[in-house]
Image (cartoon, rainbow, N blue to C red; front, side, top):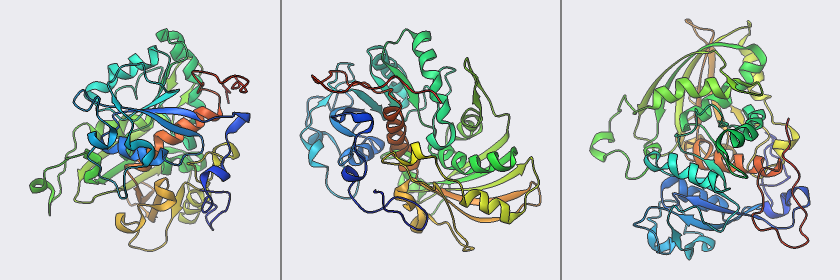
Length: 393
């Protein structure tokens, strides 16, 4: 991405290095580790970090069966293009909190993520997690920077409550929640929200690899994803709620979700109906969505796009095959905005489940943590400018 802008105001073009110098006079990149680096989300993080202007990948960690192998030997690579050269020869480590890095991304399976993330935070590592285990903890920010950046104010309390020093845990939401809440945010700001009814059509890549058996999903729809509806009904309450200095206060929405697995590779499609607190016509709703843009602080982050919600006019869009990579996978794409005979409005939205809903979301969270001074260089280079104290907003 670069400082050049498209007609949407989104960054395109030049190299990230030239467009995004290190913030605050910092003279060297932050060193990142990835826990669960061989899985689908871990692989996506490896690829996104390959040419990142602020972060360099220095450590990869995974299960014991991969430990000791080179990353190229340990991983079954599923992404387009080769494994980045910067990662190929990294030795896969175990999940021991002694990695040579400044912070870690966690793309671990939920069966091991909870304890491992706490171990790393206790050892002083900031943990930027994609896993579900700590999302709803009362002292852990569940973060979408465009929606609730102020929730980072909870980090000092978390450190105090848990006896952490420089470590902490910040999470991003479930992949289907991420696109939903990004679209709900401008509606909440403009009109207020009362009720949301959502039906999801979720891609098979959301189940990881090998995921759903081919004989179950081919030419079929599975109307059940374990735990998914519960996440969609609880996580938006926290994301759209408030941090009052001591606790998170839920948004108080009425929210119902039906979640389905469909034979699509990437991209979660969601059909939602919304009840608004203020009366609004369809033109006003479209304008609120189309005009939603991030502030200057967020726009300066390497993975951010100025307009994270794209609105399409065609009757048959968005579609995963045609629209999933909008905004480099970080946009939520909206279409079919129309009146709802039961609630107020209804629309269709699409988001990339592995980028906006997982790896890209974690990367954007880490960028915001960096610019606000929450990521320290664990070994400070002589003469290097110290990071500012964490900024509260």
